[in-house]
Image (cartoon, rainbow, N blue to C red; front, top):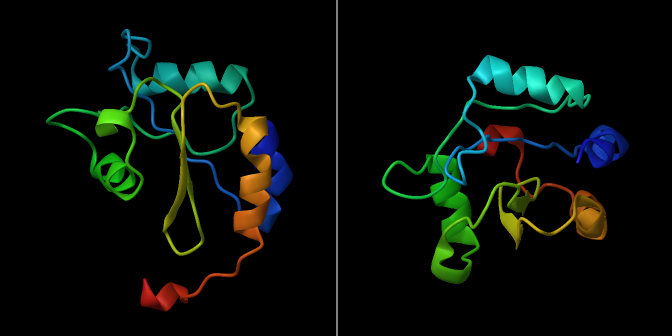
Length: 123
């Protein structure tokens, strides 16, 4: 994802990472430990605090994303699920965790080509 971020950031593309420990306890570390891990891989996009993406404590970002683009049983199935959101905050697509970042580049390019319909003052 870092390569896509670097390639398209100047056009307005952003990657937002939300670590989650709900899948096989793969993110047990603290926020500092997670950041230290991502730094090893040269990650420069924002990495937020750990959140729940399913269940009673689902973070509001994921409640919104899942409501806008429903999936099978609507839960996030595993880490690395991806959502593409346009410049107006509309969810364009939802991708399975197994979908490679490179395979969605055409969708990213298409979304970046569409100007925002509202100004920042209207959000």
